[in-house]
Image (cartoon, rainbow, N blue to C red):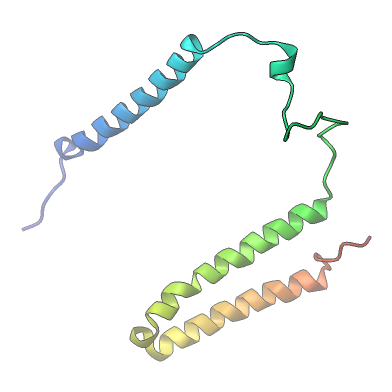
Length: 124
């Protein structure tokens, strides 16, 4: 006997979202209207470890820095996908081994492409 979901079944979830949304809106409005409003130059100045700010904080970063960071995150997240395979190694059998080797092969293709494009070279 199959069960069918009715809109009545989703009422607790809708109520939970409405309560959460109401809490967020109420908190934001309360802090805006009840919070202190004394803005002075000293209060609006950035504070960093008690040291006076010097120069412009908006210096441009090299694109290479962001590229290395994105590549690190990419390959780091790919390693996370290997964890479920390692946990279920025996249950997956030979098909699981073939699949993970093809996964690693695709990662290596991407890695060699990254090396061929000299994405990790800081010079230039």
